[in-house]
Image 1 (cartoon, rainbow, N blue to C red):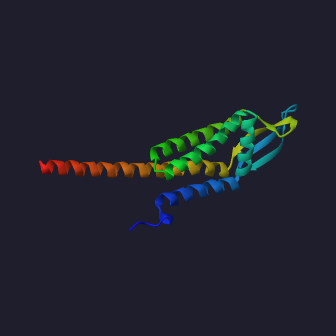
Image 2 (cartoon, rainbow, N blue to C red):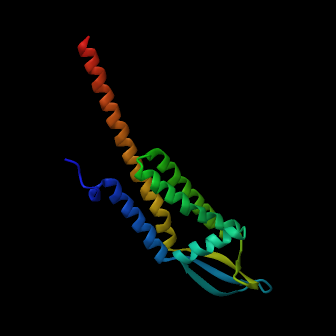
Image 3 (cartoon, rainbow, N blue to C red):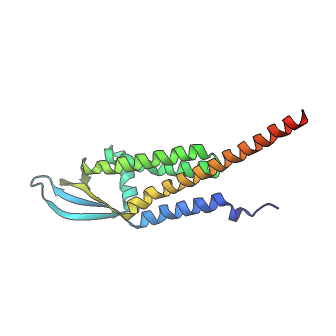
Length: 174
């Protein structure tokens, strides 16, 4: 008897990963200092939630801001989810791993590269702290990558066992 689609292990794993991603978007993700260009003094700390960072990251790509490259981890993660559902585990693992690398390196580059402070030409943003939303955002593709590697391993192991049984049957027939 075929299992109902609702209880498919892959969909449960995907649901957990997507839940981590959604929670990450709702939590504070990054803390920035607003630095005055003339005095080089910090005047205010701005905390952005994950959804805000996602929107500003997309806009940053349009304006060619280098730290906004971290935003590209989002489509890589979604692509990894798609591959995971299609049972292409190896490609899903690679895509999730690249999402983690791109997301982490792109975001932490804001420690060294300043970002514009909206339309204010007299100040800029400087990343000061990575908050829980950021780590959950990276945990979503990380979780998917780890579980996909388990699924890939069991798929490989099942194929190996099946090929060993077939070779034994062939030897027994001779």
